[in-house]
Image (cartoon, rainbow, N blue to C red; front, side, top):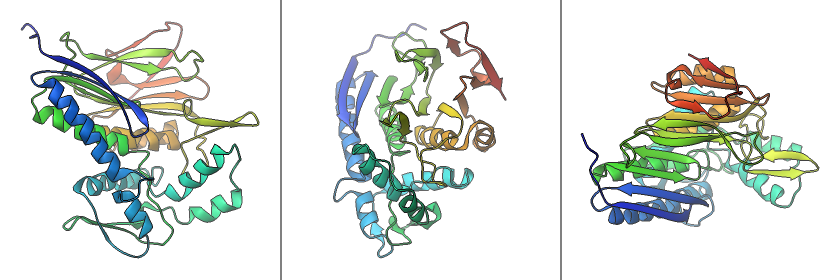
Length: 324
């Protein structure tokens, strides 16, 4: 069947503290892309850690005190977060806000946070303290001082919501990149799968180590090579281990998760980066149809065997290992 020529819109926005790229093909593509931009801003206003009046800010301000009436989106994202937290034994935990906020302020000043303060704050990190009343859309943090930070799942959930909009608006082909969180609808305008570059974390020139071909999939990568601060020659990256309070040291440089659900892929990529290769393989088995690419600190590359025919390596000298 010939691929029909449809209207094409490419749009670049800045939201959620990142550049967002859309490619939309179909009737009404321009209107839909604008609708998507507005939706991203709406969700940011709900999920923002920093904006007064956001759902998350209100929950954090009333921690240990009152139930907060929130949107259905906020309840949904917290339910997914708790599901992954439970499956990963707390390797992913959105109640690390008390730590991420502390690290962020210190690293901006190029100062290493105090270990004793970090350890004292660890007692406030526990996803089980997120109390949810789904019937009335109420959320409460059990203890005073606790804070939720959706940095490890917020963009993924947003991608999930955007995918639904594309589908509801009968968009046949679309691509959106929310700062490294990629969501695809259907095939590309050429009628072929979308091609997604997988970054080589060891490349100073920011080259890709391979190309992934996907249809109707989300591709999310977590790594230590983009957001970090160098202090006295030591790099402190942004992904904290909820169990130690410090940037995770799991023996991985990056984790890419390929899944139908963008929210799940986002949370799992963070959890796996914290857990390390071996424990991550057990976690992924709990979720059907999840595929993954792991790059270790000693430059070994492991990928799901199902990716054999949709992943093409660029450097033929690089050795890859398949995992089942």
